[in-house]
Length: 205
Image 1 (tube, rainbow, N blue to C red):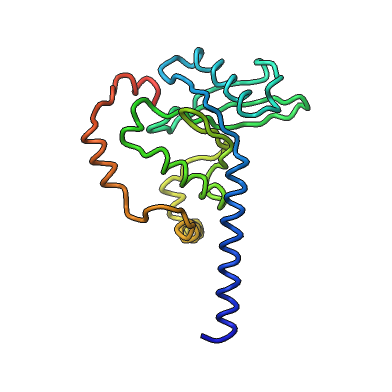
Image 2: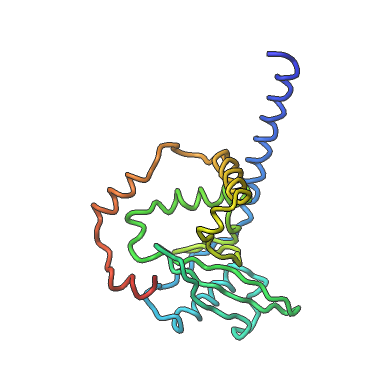
């Protein structure tokens, strides 16, 4: 290996070390709370709890009146109840965040610790919604105002090429832990722990 290659590898290792250090720093800055929100309640009952959660997680909102918060459901959640929270701050700015409440009993088939770890690293690398906070039975992320791609979108060559490019970057993100596929493990856990109350879940998802 030549001197140039050695120098390049050293620079790459330094960059990787710095990136991981930045990840750790950003992780330590993510607010956490032991607060939990019962997902079996109706939206009208859940909303005050979500507002209280937001005030607990984000101290700059702790003195805001409850009327400054608006809570609504977001479609698309499979194992989570997704809520969009709009906050009107004292300076008049409006901010939107997403509150993800884990579905009942989903921790039997989803390793939430592994999921959270992955989201932390992917968020720090710029993929998906930014992780803003973590609480007892869910997480808070930035709200992305977007739509689902249609088959017509997917036929666009430039868009398909950009998706492939981003997937390449996505798979290069280093996440600690096992690199073994977990799909079948999760499917078998789902089968073995078939304890979901589908009637209850269908009320929310």
